[in-house]
Image (cartoon, rainbow, N blue to C red; front, side):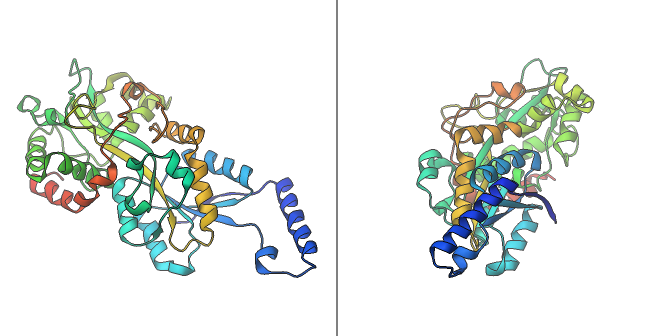
Length: 358
């Protein structure tokens, strides 16, 4: 894990800020209190996100605020271990990560502090806040059903349909050892109960055309080459493949289509299961006010759109559509709050194990 980017102040802005510091010193009679003599604050962001999605937003924040941003990239557990080990001596200010499971783990490990912001409370609906306002969602996606139009004339629309005997030997899924899989099963338990979720998972395993895939790329390729007829994955993976312009994704873009999870997918009795990316302020942040300003900047409607669309995702509080055919998915304006599934996260691995879902 190493620093992978730094967004410095422009030389003009640096000169301006230093001039302001000098004027403050002169006005105070030359006394140098630490608060006045210190350099302007800079932020350290720990990120489990691709820099192509994050960089433009952070650059915009630096240009507007004059606050430098360091970005340290790592896997979720690496970042949380760093925050825990460094404690009050750490430099982390903001955590950016993917998925409810990782956000809930950060909260459980006590590395975040409550977010106090009138602007964020007014901008982001309550459904997209973590318990006790320890984190905030920044973008979302749907757990979608994807299918090969070469093998199915129409998409399977319901999660439950993946368990139908008619699909024996035709279903492809991802492995169960990811945060995405854990959060999905936790949400399903919340919707239908543990017993029904296990029954569904067992039936899906019986319908598998191949062992669960480690990557989305592998699953989509299996749909494109006809190994399987239908699969289950996050909506942003197909959106990215359809807009990448890379030859390797052309077969996927031409062959694979998206249906929707859940009834319709926003039915009356069940809702589509939603995944999120999110952020929190580090418990021991040296600059919590500046960290809050960054989260507020990212939550501006225009920045939500920019951030979400770059990743093929959806915003949390303004209307937006990702690229590709996934644009046709409804936004699910009233989704089940992701945090409502948090209490079932620990039960999810047990369900997968009982079903034989590797």
